Amino acid sequence: MTSGTPPRPTRVNGVLDDERNTLLTASLLVVFGLAYAACWLHLGPQTLAWTLNRATGTVAYMLLAVTTATGALLGSRSAPTWLNRAYQAGWHGVASGFALALGALHGVLLTVDRQSPQTFAAILIPGRSTVLPLPVALGTLGLYVLALVVVSTHLRRHVSTRVWKALHLTAYPAFVLLTAHGITSGSDHLGVLYGVSVALVAYGFGLRLLDVRRTARARPRPR
Image 1: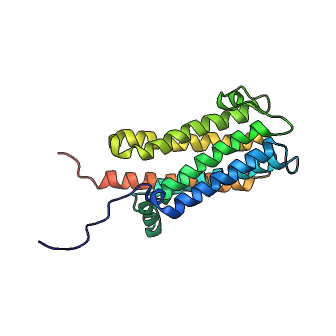
Image 2: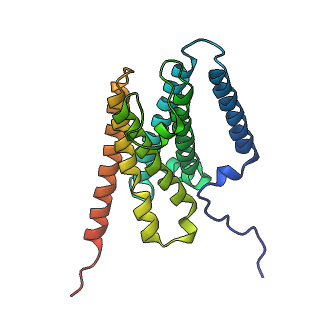
Image 3: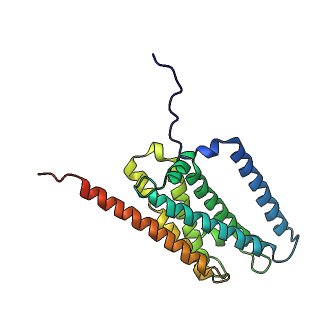
């Protein structure tokens, strides 16, 4: 019998098991909770909720763009070595999870906006918002679809590959919905961010399609 360390299994969200990441997540939750409480109690500047809303939305969208663009390359010939290593370490799943969490906080902060506070029902039900109903509805729908993607990551070991891929492909509709949400909101000058993000996702998706077509051509045809 040979001795040695058995190979480490593939981990989809391995970083979530790390104590440092758990501490980081807990710290962020505390910070977000304090920020929400400050807005609710009308502490700080009048624009605090507005500023936090824009900041969380922007960072969430950036994380979504990166994970969507790089996710298209995972498992393909075009994927760089560092990307596969990051996936094995769990960073892809963690980044998408944080995108969902920040996006949810982005919406929740609308309930403590001093100028036009919204109810939770107005945020959770598309079309119920009294301010920018279309952009808010697009954001709500986009987050619901993104939640489906994140949940599918955790269900990978419990469903068939075909079902998992079908669920995971909904990342593209989520990206489209949330991009439309940001553009139609129109309150920030983030045109460059949206343009670069769409270009990156389109580039990654295009490389993935080319890889699929090359693989299909390389397969021997039945006689």
